[in-house]
Image (cartoon, rainbow, N blue to C red; front, top):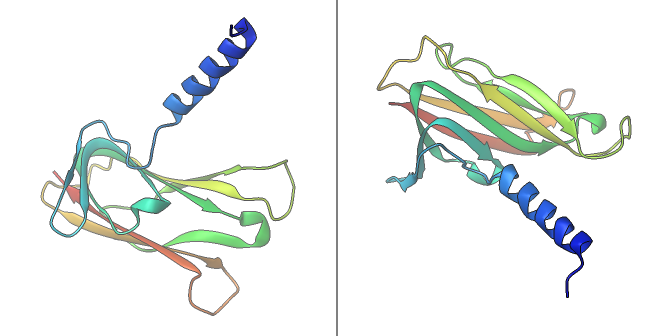
Length: 150
């Protein structure tokens, strides 16, 4: 027989997994487009595995990109290509280890909130690069996505 404590621990773990969601979480169903997966929603969450995807969202939508990073070792993600209409995101970082530890990975979140300049029918491509700001070599990683405004 399962003890009440073990049952509670399993229930807690399941609840935590259910609340975290998955890459590509949306308010609506995802469909497949010609070149890439198209995600339609008013709120879209992208992860590292969504690199190269096309996202379809409404003019009042919010887009969140979550990618792993390591600010403490000098690496950072930087938006290197976007347009004024789509705009630049707010950036936050959540350390995955003890506070102040060097070399500890972080989860970096970029959030584009609704923008009154967005117009239906527009398409916006955003490109980010992951590298140390002082290095002149090409980026270690890139992330690109396209937003189609519906």
